[in-house]
Length: 70
Image 1 (cartoon, rainbow, N blue to C red):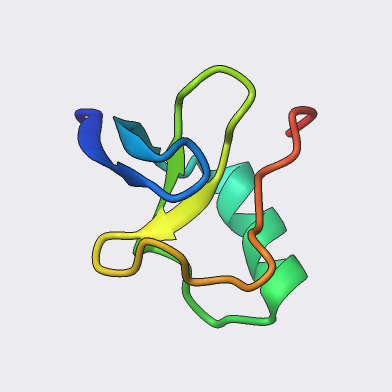
Image 2: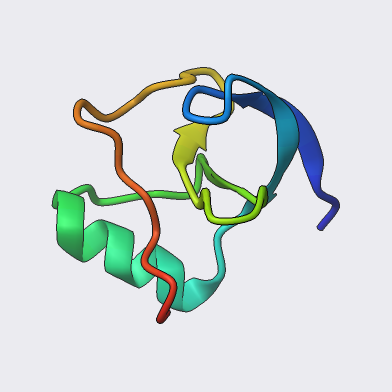
């Protein structure tokens, strides 16, 4: 899968985002209780890891970031 430039709410500009890996999807499902998390992307900017969907820039309030240790 290719990385995509998308707007990152926490960075305040367009940054590269990638789809989630299987272990990251499992963590997000467990954390949010959602049945599916296929629509989520993670910001690849240094120290960001903010989550968004293809359509929503800020799907969580407060923001939700993937932990570094996944």
